[in-house]
Image 1: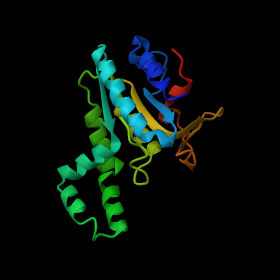
Image 2: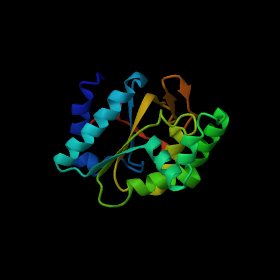
Image 3: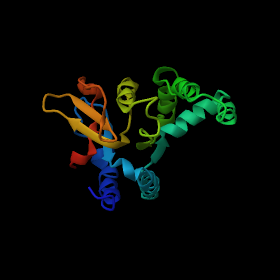
Image 4: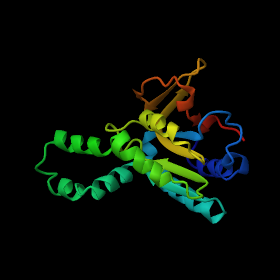
Amino acid sequence: MHLNELPERLFKILSHPSFLAMKGLANEVPIFIQTYEPAREDDIRRMVESLAIRLRNTGTTAKSLDLFNLVLEEMEEHHVLEDLLRDEVSSQKADILETLQNYSDPKTHLIPRLIRAIGDDGTQLTLITGPGRIFPFLRTHTILESLQPAMLRHPVVIFFPGEYVQEPTGGSHLRLFGSIPSPRINNPYYRATNLDHYRL
């Protein structure tokens, strides 16, 4: 879908009472994937911010979160971000990557922070950007697997720079940037709904 048409389509879906009430999901978790061309990363981030504002202005309690910003917040809270930035020029790339990986660890750092940020505060919808910005130290399928036990109480939309392929046999693949495949996701509870194919 052309980027010019996407905001209106998403607004229509995401503001619809049936979508917000999570009707028709059966036993699946209310996680949705909206794919886009990786080259449009900056455009998508701006679009998501505008979409969140429009939703809020029309009565939908929506929040937008960026995964990379959450990693930075986690590092700042543990007082390592300032040191990392100060020593960046003299540090080995492998050491910087290891620090980023440590503070984006899904079990001990990023997913607990993400779940707290999503919250149970009456929010009706959460929009998540940044899967491409946190690669390779965290992959989207790990986020899906980690969010599933969280018992989400409202829809969560993850904006993904690549392809989301759902197979007739029930498995699915995320292809970051259209070429880097995730492991096959077999558990149906880990599968997100592809918004490209969503119909009200």
